[in-house]
Length: 149
Image 1: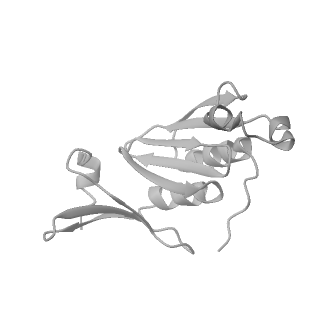
Image 2 (image 1 turned 30 degrees about the horizontal axis):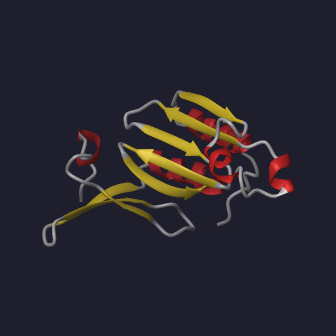
C-alpha cells in the first residue's frame, strides 16, 4: 500500500507529529535550515549545481516521548533515520509515519537465536517488507527485553 508522499521535511514533521498525537505522544522538534546548518550543505557545497544551490536545505530532529525512546532524524534527500531505544532504522521519509504507527500498535518484536547468538528487532509495516536491525547486549533495554519471542 503506497504511503502519501511527503515532499518536504516540514510535511514529514507534520505527519510525524499527527501520528504521535494519535498515540498520545509528546513531540519536540528542532530544525536545521540552510547550507551552514545541515549535513547536506556541508558535503554538497563544493560540487553542487546551480539548481541545488537555489534550494535551501532543511533537516529536522524529532524527539518523541516514551517509553520507548524514539527519535527521527529527517535529512534533505528523502532519507530518515528512526532510532528506537538506541537501535537505528533507515526508513524512507514517506514511510516514517506508517513505521511509527506500526511500532505503537504493537507490530514490533525481537527475535532471539541461541546459535549463532543474535537478537534482531523486527518492525512490520503492512504493505512493506519488515524492517530488521540487530540489537546488541549493550542496547537491550527493559522495554526491548519484554518484546523478545
